[in-house]
Image 1: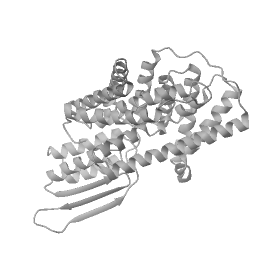
Image 2: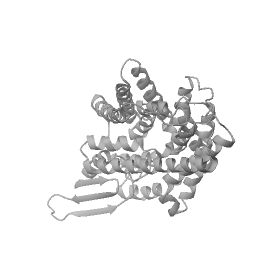
Image 3: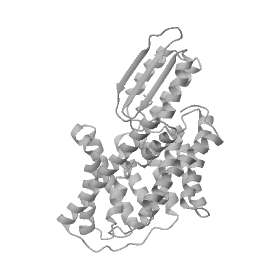
Image 4: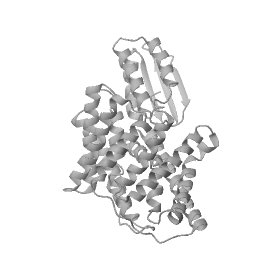
Length: 390
């Protein structure tokens, strides 16, 4: 259950060890994004119970994660028996999305528009990004009913978004920044967070899980970039190209509005409980404010480190006060840090016009930023250790 809801391997293994110790069981767990292995035995009995399962990489469902963790807490406190917990876990497993399809669609559209706003582009791009993200959501709903669509969802939505953006630039709005709008429309699929989690697992020496997660992130990036590249080529071939007319850029203060809108939309997309919503939004503001503020005096890479450290301390504080998994809050802050970092600031300069231009050391800076994210979280766990393993 915890694996299904997107828990990192090193936290999941520690949590399972805690539960098995409470049940007076000896155990060993090996977690990876595609498989789980349990070995369970008791003192004086050499016969082991071994369970190996092939699983799919989970999606983030922070509401169900909180419910599952709450059940474990109740069992550890003696409030529920193991049998009662087992029955309630089945109920959580089949529980529907707490947010309806209309609300989720609005959240998707808001996330795309908010990302474009965070990039400091124009109101034109914000509007078209939100519109195309809504189209992407229609494909997401289709993929839930069709396995064939689900298998090719990422390149498909990138191709469709790129073709539509090219059509819009020719027939509706010459002020649309095609590549930025395409990136904003598919930003929900960009695996920046998964890549950061994979590197964190590698740093914790969970080599199999970390390597698998990093490679899965790279493959997802390849599919998205390939789809966007093909889609733009098809769009130019069908509709032709027009000269880009730069519209009026957004004022600086809109970045803070973008953080509010992005974090609010992620609450719905990640199915976060409403009682944790204010913590999640605060995490986004802390991440952006500390990273941008410290970047005024330090390098952007060190600014990312300060932002990740602040998010880590805040999420561990949430863990102690709310007695809920720290990842519920950390997830929001990390997602804000990825587009708010030098990687996407550099990317912003790449896509000022219709064509990409050369950016010096962008690959090196990207690697340093992800390392700063991981280091910030590690130092935060030392400065204020979480109360529990999740």
